[in-house]
Image (cartoon, rainbow, N blue to C red; front, side, top):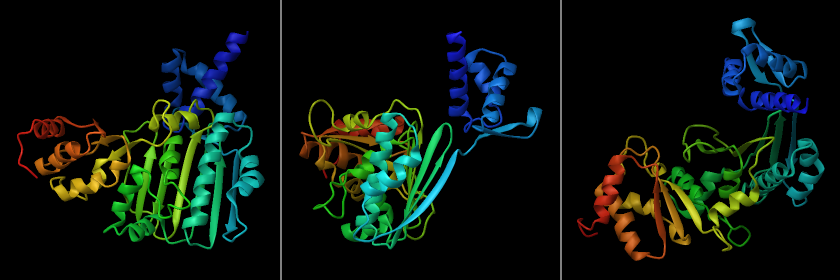
Length: 346
């Protein structure tokens, strides 16, 4: 009897976890996974609808299922000298998140306090809006301010030519406009703790989703202030420790590894061909001991670009390990070519 009950719970959990990706064919999708009939799956779908965990629209073959919000909440906080992220967490946020596993609650604790504190210390705004939506499977949170905008502030403080340069620098980690009070690690680690993490500001969008190939995107979004959106499964094996350990390998304490999304250095149809573009990619990577260059979305690179990174910089910094991921055959050939030494001198 216990085995039957457990299998039913497994099926329900699977339906809740995958219904967002398969709203119209979730019954077939689950039936194929568990090797059972669609009729059997429909019994579990009916149960979840009755429990108000799912919402069903349409009839028979035109049925569609979506996660039902179990709780929706929002509140605005004026930014003043008395506003503190730990107080807001204990008073408002933790109770609203409800009965989540401890590892999940630790991730939310880290993510909320980091992003809320950033808005207090860096936004220059007058208020922060926090919104939470919880379903049976996931929880989403928005932390939004009406300040200067994170990318614009980084651009101004670091003397960058474009807000897109700010996104590239932010993706590397160890970037802060206030080194006396902040380490610059908050957004880097927080973005990797959540299933989906996005920042919209200054007409640009910074995104990292678990399960993608370092999917950092740029598109037109929010024009004023900064909006941070985070989403996490209510039951995940991920922990804050596992995320920190990925970038501080072994027993060594510290943030020693970074991943650089190379395609952020190219704009529109521009090709990555010049040494100046390479130097933009290389900015501040000497702060790390291991640098992973992610070439996802890069079709080709020029000889000078590759040479600056994989021969010149490598020779100047033999203590730094340079790794490459998601490179196609054309990019791999150019990197191999400059490493062979048969290139022009810089």
